Image (cartoon, rainbow, N blue to C red; front, side, top):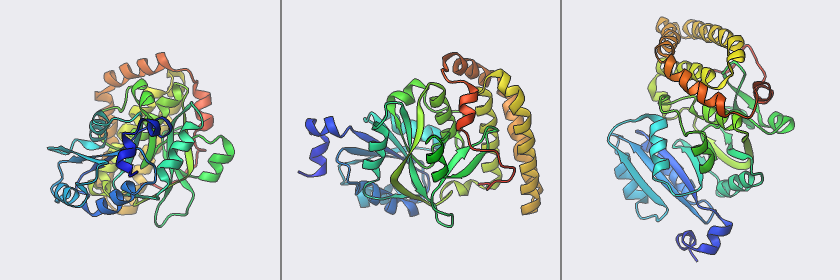
Length: 335
């Protein structure tokens, strides 16, 4: 029995729930062959791949249809313009059918058993709302994970430390699974984000409702760090990161915690911007935090309305959340 027949086999569906792998692409033709080849060769018997193209102009669509168009697992959604990471993935999810959703960056490459291990870990605990793959990044030591500290800064931590502590993180990264019911219960992506920090916001909001973000140690995926998003430019990446960090803090912290945390977070953002300006000898890198703060002031009413919704439905307190967050370190590796 081939894999395509397994998808429609009811007994197999009972033991192997349908998984929808959402891959967003924007002018990433160079990454698509290794990514799609590895995913389509997964040894899990019941999955679909929804490739969403965000108006690429580099021949990505023609290449995919020519190289992989006959694979029964693959469907291609073509957007007419670049709608951003968040909206692009939301469209992919809307076109997907699985109860288990995998968000996978196009600059990744997976091992054959990655899906099987990812699903095994997810289903081992009904409170596992999000499950993150074990990411390997060239030029970085093995066994590192993206995480977040209490001031909203993205940091790298050792997988071994996470597993020894509590097995949970507040992040998701370039390859993760989220249950559809959890995605819908937390209200999906915040569509104002465009890109950056969206995964940490998802993870945080899921935890506030009592779900865990855990790691599938044996689900291994390699990732070319910022392979596609590096084209945005450093200034734009910093702006989106700072902007979305501040919105995430305001939405997800209680008012009392926010009063204590936000001033320090703002200070760290400004200091980081000054350090980048000095490192790259580029004074324009002082602008991203200013623009990010102004955007958040302008959109504060909208953010605060979401804050009220989040706080009303939460079941986990800030102290518990902060116990899961990464330890604060004054210096960090900046993306």
